[in-house]
Length: 496
Picture 1 (cartoon, rainbow, N blue to C red):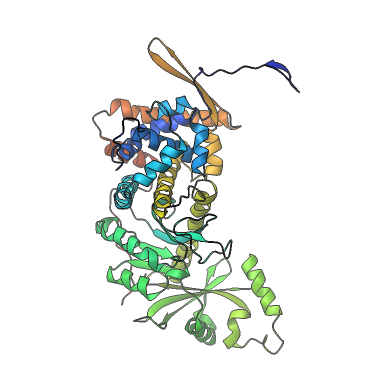
Picture 2: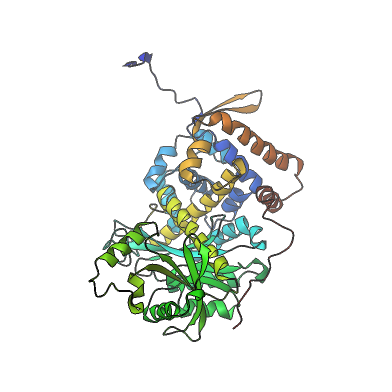
């Protein structure tokens, strides 16, 4: 074909023989998977078997799903765009990738209980070594709107699209590292935190005490008796936000009526005071930390709305009476905890919980949590767990290349996966010519080469080590400052 373009005339033909891949830098991530042993274990322990001689290989099915997640696919139909990539298939140890129908049917074949046990084991293999160090567990629920007739598509709390059926994702995180510990997919009308408690505490009870978090942290949905009592039964620390109910507002009024010295500055315009509270439905009085900040200096849209609400009050209500203190001079937050730390420390610890919203945004908008939905709820559950598992692998791989901080996929995927590769073979050796297409390629190449050298040394000179020991050494290389030989200190709990 003769094709005229603004750059001149080109003679174009098809080449179906040249092995080439649009995700050439995948070779470096494949080396990371080989050194860690995670992909091999995922395939070997998958509860998937076929009896037909024409059925696809289960390793090819999982390789297709993993590669699709890495490439940014959000629907099963998007997997078809990868089928011609023989180079990427070879990097994952399969002859070729399978079609979308083979992947979907394979997920339908999986027994839900066996699949849950299989994937939870893969999650544990990633974080097992990290759990021996002090860490914090963040728990939260996110909503996934649905647009078809899927199982579990129920009407419930949906802040982005009210009235739209949805699924509720109950998720547990390792704070700061942004690693997902597990996710449970529930119907949209089961968004309440109580629907995820059994899974959370079953996960904790199955582990030795040395691997438990320092404390559990969550938003105002978790500040209820069912959660607090179960934490106290296990002598587990907690830090949750409280809703400003009638009794909670009465506590604020009492604190405002007390001496001004009860409020201590804790930085960034916030002040803190401490009290005890027993809400309706609680079985005991608990420690509560009240935080306040003047509306005149508070940033953000929430403070703007409250300032507007204050200005809209009639003059006789906007007069500084403590009974209406919530809508007057200050904005407030209430924290309930059994930790014995001072208010300043608790305020900082809870402020760090804001980072737990970032991986939700990343998984829904940059990975596949917003898609990969099927008619059966169990298929959506397996897909969600597979996506979060690959997200964990990629997050740690990106830290290996650029160890300073966590990089979201919108930045790390084009940098570390954007490129082409051409495969050739000569004298019994397979060669792969890789070209990075990102603008930062000159700066990235030394970082990738250092990571490749470390992993190849681990594979070549430590052949006597099994996959779990190699993974332990990779984590120690990644988190040398955080991973100490001593175990975590017991959580500082307040006196009962």
